[in-house]
Image (cartoon, rainbow, N blue to C red):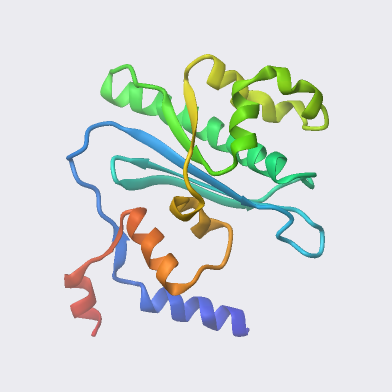
Length: 191
């Protein structure tokens, strides 16, 4: 009951917030991924989080517990990169149908250098034999030049908001980067 009260209090306090979409910036799809390796202390499963922005505002996001236990941070990040890759391919298809144009490779930002190397280099097979085959989809999409996995410093990893508790300063910073803004007219009506 205490958790429900916290959630309702949060929802009531943020009722005037929403996503603001603008027409500037063109059709530029990019994503951010993150995982908290073994974040659940009971079953040791990681939480995956990713989001995609079209221009400067978020259009798609996900946060969920991974179905298997990752044996390393690289594997946990690779699993979320694969999930984000599937979402990116679907979004690319939708956007190409809507705008009738060919898109540049979609950039997915990740802070794990080993995960990035694993998507680019199939020679790492000996080190990744334990990773389930379905997660290698992202490597295939990188090789086909549909996706590009690029490094982003940990401090700029927007998807942190979906995987771990943050300080208020970091939370507000990432919330703003996602395009979540307060609608002043709604805030005045609520008061």
